[in-house]
Length: 181
Image 1 (cartoon, one colour):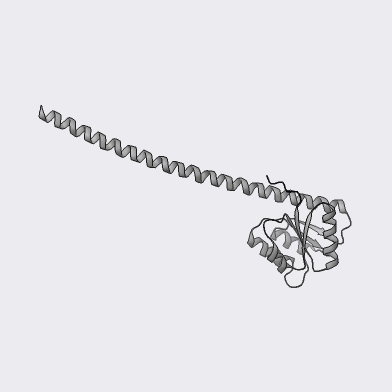
Image 2 (image 1 turned 60 degrees about the horizontal axis):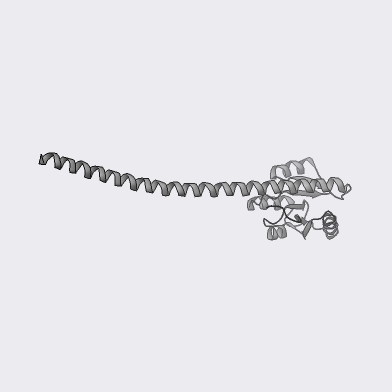
């Protein structure tokens, strides 16, 4: 159903060495990876096929904060993990307010923690997609049932109208018969 062979991740970092390293690590863990060098490219390539976005905060042009703000407008609901070498409480608060899923520090020192964070983000994406499919299915069912009710209501109205005409006709016939006697 939703099970894909490989999760698809997007890595955005202006440093080619970081992009290459993170990409190789993710591929080692069995993921499919696309890389871009800045936030503008993220906005250009992102679609619903991605499961997780790993985004550097400090990039020239469109930084990580501006990029996630644009991603939020697109409403793909893809978990974003900020990749940062230097973090502050201000960054963390701003990131959380923008809906960042988690933080990854660079250089990546603990591959197990890195892998767990990625897997959790992928799980969140799978839940989001399942919930979206459920909601769409539910909306579809409601529309189908509403259409059925509308059709049944039309039949009932036709039946009611026919019954009313038949009753009026029968009463008229009975009145005519009584008047003739």
